[in-house]
Every structure is written in C-alpha cells, then in structure tokens.
Image 1: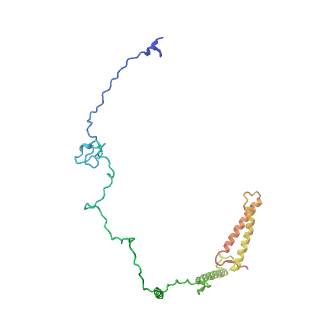
Image 2: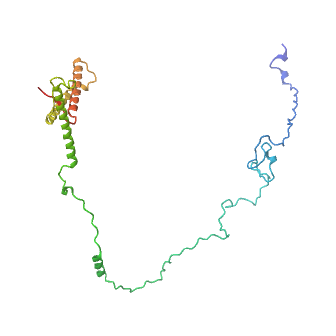
Length: 277
C-alpha cells in the first residue's frame, strides 16, 4: 500500500511552499470623475441652472443650498461660543430708535397718608324726619300685579261650551241622515226597486242606544267566562288528549267571535238591525 495515498501520513507534516496570488490592477473608469452627473438636480433649488450639469453651471450670484457640510470649511473659533439669548428674538424698537414707552393716562388720586387727619366737628342742618315724611308723601304707589281671574267667578263656569253644542248638532244631523236613508231603503224595497240590497220581506231599524250598551256588557261578561276556561288550557305545552285539543280550538274561535261582535257594536254612529216581523 502506498503511503502517500493514505489520509493520515507523516509526510503531511512537512510544510508546503505557499503560492503568491497576483493582484488584479485597480479599476479606473474611462470617464472623468469630476464631470457633472447627468440628470442630477442636486443643489439647483432656486436657481436657473440647466438640469444635467449640476453645480458646475450655477451662476456666481447663486448660493448652493444643498451641500455636504459648509461650502468653505473653517476651523471652530473657541471664543465664538453660543451665548445665552443669542438666538432669541431681538427686542422691538420704535421707528425713532428710542425705547417704546406707553403713554401715561390720568393717574388716580394718591392714597391718603397716615398723617392726614379728617375734618372734625362738621354738622348738617337737614331734618331727616321731615325729609323722610315728604319723600313718603310724594312717592307714587307701586303698581300691583293684576290678579288672575278665578274660573269659579266666570260667567261660563258650569256651562256646556259652545263647541260641544256644535258637536251634538253634527251627531244629531248624522243620525237623521242615516234614519232617512234607512227609511228610503225600506220604501224602495216595498216598491221592488232594491231587491239587490235587501232580501224579500226584510226591513231594518236603528238599535236603541241603551240596548246596544246592555248587549256589549253581556258580550264582555261572556268573554270573561270563556277566557277563564281558556286560561286553564292555554299554558300547557303538550296536550295529549284529542278532547282538550278540540276544546282549546273551540274556545279560541269563540273568543275571537266575541271580540269581533264587541268591536262591531262599539263602532260610532247608529246601528241598523233587522226588524223583527
């Protein structure tokens, strides 16, 4: 077996000579590095320079507004440091250059000093009793608030208002028109001219108001009785027997019929019923 072909060999400990790689030459562009950038607008804000020539076409009177640092670099001056109030707004001065002074208004009288003494011994000759009595006599009395008129003292208290008389007249006129219409229908029926409206041998009359009220009261009492029986079944969720189901349906239909009859009898205006023979 060849010793040089093995992975571990003593010959590998012998240092091998190193090869120096040759460096490639530095890349240098064929274009002028100091030429202006094509299409650049750097530093042209507020100028009339042509786009594409950069700062090289700026006029001498223009100021470069976009630079990396100051245009002319200078060393910092240790004596020129930032002082307090140097960046604040300068105090306003008048047009004449003098300091502004607010015009002086008329001053109030000074406060009396502690050494000033009031004048003592002054007396008045005014008679306050006579003055007060004269003022009370000459004074005009105050106007009293008008008292609201009591409703009990009005002439119309306890009387029916006029508009209610008008309403009653309208209702009476409506009743007369309905009675006249019913009489006309009955008359036409006897003559044979209203066979399509009334059946043969049937006449109608207006129900008495007292009778209608009694009938409505009876229907309401009947509704209460049926509803009391219905409440015993309506709360059930499941009804097993067939008799309870039919009884519930009959009570619901009866309640609905009673409500319809009460609503029909409670309508305003006269009620026409079939005249009994």
